[in-house]
Image (cartoon, rainbow, N blue to C red):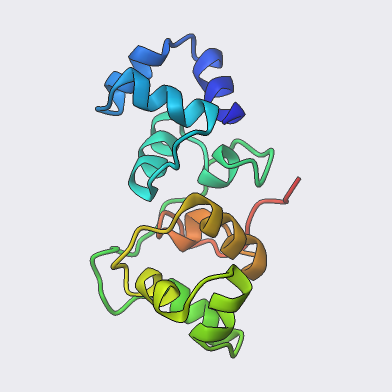
Length: 150
């Protein structure tokens, strides 16, 4: 992943140094940089926070490095479900969204209920389809509108 390497080099860090900051192995971090391993949402949040950038920037959805304003929502609040909220705003059901993503309704449902981590490629598809930031989908910000896309 080019942005990870760019940010690391801009900050004059070695892979082993950033890996230590993220509590992981240098090999694991290296696999993120070259794109052989998917980055979990937890790790995306850590990396974005470490570099003070948005996840949208990390995943090349925007060229704006600025981090979004912080959310006042507590993700532990089970009454808040952004994926469901956004889907229902569009008057879509889970089966329709799952079809757009090329997956089963059951698989998609597990993302809405937070039973499964959302893979990076799915986060990107959802953010583009709904025209929201990944940071919004992951409760990092309450700003629904993304920075301008590329």
